[in-house]
Amino acid sequence: GGYALTGLVTWYSLRKIKREKDPTESIPKASLLAAAFFVSSSVTIPLPPSSVHPLLNGLLGIVLGYYAFPAILVGLFFQAAMLSHGGLTTLGVNALTAGVPALLAHYLFQLSRPLRLRNFWLTSAISFIGGAGGVAITVLMLFGLLIANIPADLDASVERSTIVSTLVIAHIPLMLVEGAFTAMVVSFLQKTKPELLPELPEKV
Image 1: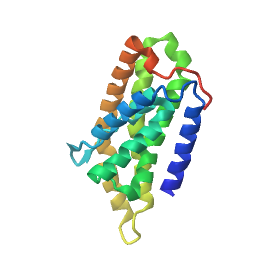
Image 2: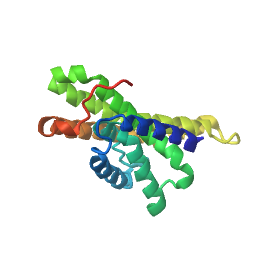
Image 3: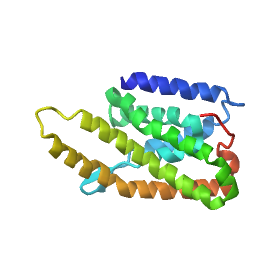
Image 4: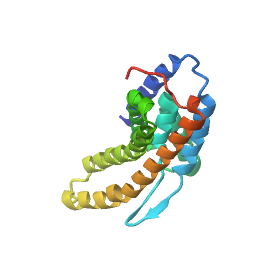
């Protein structure tokens, strides 16, 4: 199921990319950010009662647009193949939980374009929401998957409490940090290299 849905989203993303004026123009940028995603999400940060991995999927979604999903998929594949992170069997699910929030961040950034053009500070605020929201939606998707797959012989209420404390609560600081980092990067690009941001109005 995970691989089928990942294949569908990949097809959708590539279809959107092919409709751009120059589909190859953003490949170097996508390669660079795929490498950044590979490195950042390979880092484990101990954050009691659990540990977290930086994602940057909201940032990738805002900066790369539809290139974000293939970039994340490639980064996760190399993690599984080279570092045994996640594994190839869960590659499809991992790509969905990291890549779909990236696309949602892209949609948020594009749909808010009229507001951002009027107020520079709104760019920072929307970028913060995109960065933090990317992590938040990933966590919520993982939470739903874990809850849905609790073995019948275990106490569901205890397991839910454990998942909330080790997954959801542990990622709240990461949401705030990634939101702030995304806001800083996007605001900097908006001032210095606005051409690096996908600004063409699109139909979702």
